[in-house]
Image 1 (cartoon, rainbow, N blue to C red):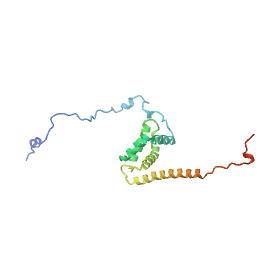
Image 2: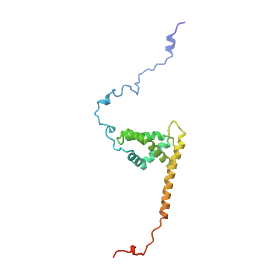
Image 3: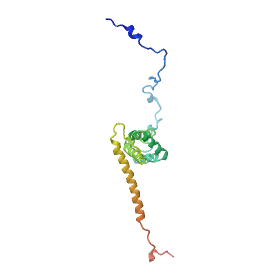
Image 4: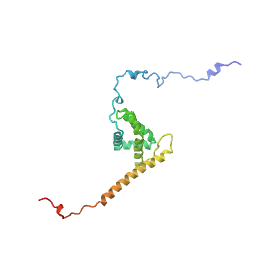
Amino acid sequence: MAYDLKNDIKDINIPQGYQESKYNPFDAPIPGQSLTNEPGNAPWEHPPKITKPEEAIGYIWDKLSKEKNFKRTITLLKFGMPVEALTKVISFSGFLEGKWSVDVAKMLEPTIAQMVATLGATAKVPMKISLEDQSDSQFFNEIASNELALDKSKAKAENNLAKNITKPTKSNGLMTRGVA
């Protein structure tokens, strides 16, 4: 029994007309092309503007706590963006902008994650920590809410301390009299 190629081919539906693919694999830089560019054009090729992680944390918190950025962060968390992904975007974008080095960016990630989790807990938004591990969500939500509760208790203690401090009574002693 011989193989009948004509019967197999007649059932194939061949499109009549050519359409170019939207993806062109040749529309890419030539290997090594970046090595021919003038050095120093990119912000990360210069010394970073912020070298200390403490200063970078303050800078990030100032940016995140602005109303516009706070609303954006909460919106992203509401739509299910994981805290880990948002953290990596924040730390890497600072590196790309030349704010800090890649080493500082990596050191900032745990603190940025806590900041984002605190913002989410403040807004009472259910958060995903990472795409892979859903069991950590409860743990980080508790950490963020504990930080928020700690801040509230500190503020309450300061208010109570201010109330308990009594104003000194006016004394009529010799040392308290004014100089003539």
